[in-house]
Length: 602
Image (cartoon, rainbow, N blue to C red):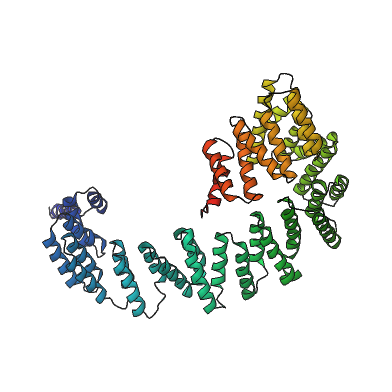
């Protein structure tokens, strides 16, 4: 009997304890749903059971939301008496007065919290965060500033202050505090760069530059400031000044030129060849042969000089001969072998495309293919180039043989797709339109966006023009003219195009004829004639397939050759506005934003 009684008593105790337990999740759900009466009871019990501040703060918030202000004051006074060291309670008290529209009393409570701040890092941070969470940014700033004084460390809360100044829109103070945060923690420089990138508008970057220059003058041996300045100039694509800072940093840290080399590669890819040349030359001259980047810098220097001449079509015969001599000198010094193979190919391309010495270009690549154990991709690129050179000489069989070798060796690789595209283009040049169109159709699915887009263009082009001329005679004339252009036989190409216009007047290739002529005019640096031809397509053949290409290339012409950025910007905008479905629309929008000066283009 006694055992039964004890068991029953125990079950009653368990049931009572379970009844008194409160679910924090359910209580929070009541609060989020605005059911403050239900939440109030739960938070009151939870705050009594739990020593943390969260449930008590929620309990007071329920009282405030239910406008039980008097009860809220009593609860807070009791809690402050119980835990006087928790100065954040005064902030809760202040928010209670604010809800009663008593701003003076609220400020008194905030000041009490600030006045009672102890020399305790945790309490200081907690109070500042409490002010921050309630939108009292001025008081949060004051708290961090006083905390820095109490802890005798003026930079301890610099990062926190920077975030607050950012919220207040005080850019100069924000920048100053982020830089101060690096005094004790220079290893956080990447985090600070990320914050600057996220928070600073393009026009505010000048404030950062001013402060960095001032600090760099005061602390010339501090590596953080040239590192940040180089990063800043890189954001502006001011590679010249970025290099100046990285060279300084390279000397300060006694590095081997790694940062300078990588920046030179970035500048080269962005076509700032003068800046890139400066970087490569620094490694060659200042770091010397002991640098692991010495040989690569020599190679890249040559390639950069060549691209500076040829990309701008601003070269003279004498300049081309000079760069040819420099290539020969490099190869005589480094030797002609598997390691210098890419340089040999660059020289071959210079001979073929700019010095019109196809025989020497072919000889160079034949020598290259005889070098020891070549990297298979280097070998494939050489074969594709050699195939092009044979095509330029009119030796079509040699071309297709080389293209097919690469296609077979790289069946499912982009390199193989490139070889297949060139073979298809060769068939197009020779009038085998059905076979070439089939190949272009397959290549539309290429993983290379460039090959895919070009294949789509060719597929549509052949289909459109075969459909309007059952004999294919006009298209055959045009393809022959294209081949002549590829072979740099411009006079013969123009004669072929003039015959096409005369013998097939009004045919569907009119816009294509102007388009091909425009490309030749650009090669010959006859830019005014090129503008006229592109403009003719845009105005007279706006619904034809060359219209978007003409717009894009005319915009590029104004941007890179005629130095009219405004005109280029307007044309890019017209392209992505009027031809939104064009494969060039995305790139045109990116170029437009670059010319407009947007910070984050991608």
